[in-house]
Length: 420
Image (tube, rainbow, N blue to C red; front, side, top):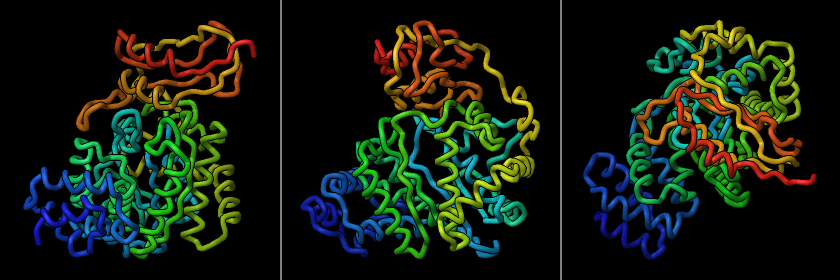
């Protein structure tokens, strides 16, 4: 079999066989296929796409390129949740606690943020002492003990995805739906959970800009899950505007804790319960409405908050953060960003807000870049609210002195309709 022939076949829009896809993934992972040939095939896929069967084969062999974690020693059906990425998206810190409080095991491996989107691992590491690097045995034992563990993604899981993603990032093929679906599902399936809930974001701050694109991706990932004996459901959620009010690592943890205390913003609370209810519904094999009722109960009676405290303690984090937010690293400077006019807020561009937060130190522009856990933005107003000239639209938290670049972005992030 020759890589040349596989590239030629897909370049002409023809369907690749499982053997051809297996050859590509396994030989590229071994280093036997050069980047220029792999790049050519990725571009051919981006242009001509793949059908569902091809995408399932690609996912299967990306899973098989490395270790597949066995969670069989953990009783019950194990659950996982994945978000396609957004701004202010801290739902894992809420929904995972709700689910675990209902005695459903949550075994989650999460990633770091890059660019305008945040990462769960970065948020957790803003908690002093919190340990996200766990051995396989520690991970499994914590899930057995507490029904929950969250750690960084293992290098041994789906190594083909890591190699191919780096190449996609440099060849303008990141936004190919088959490549996105296979990338996400290969990691989720290799991580070993039985039930997977997929939060597919759509809008200005998401990779999927239209509902139709998000629906295609969501359906494809669910079908891939079914083809590999996993229960999977998808939820499509809005990312035109930041989720909640806080954008930035420790700021988002604080907002998550407030939500677990019953004081969270409505949009964040709503999607967190929806995701949790889907996880519980799959794992307990009960109807969605019954699952939703159970989720609301443990949120209201404090059990979910108690689970968060237990979770932080067991991964060596400082549990004082639950009651005293000054335990988090504090920013050196706080700025107010005020409105230059009066009117009704029509929209807030989440992509621009995320980029401004990144400039303030909350995100990274390169994979290994450092972040400031205290940096970020807290919105004071959201869409549908009225603001007067000179009133605060957002507070900016940072250790840097010159925030001009962030301000320049924020100046175009709010759409305010005057005279309303």
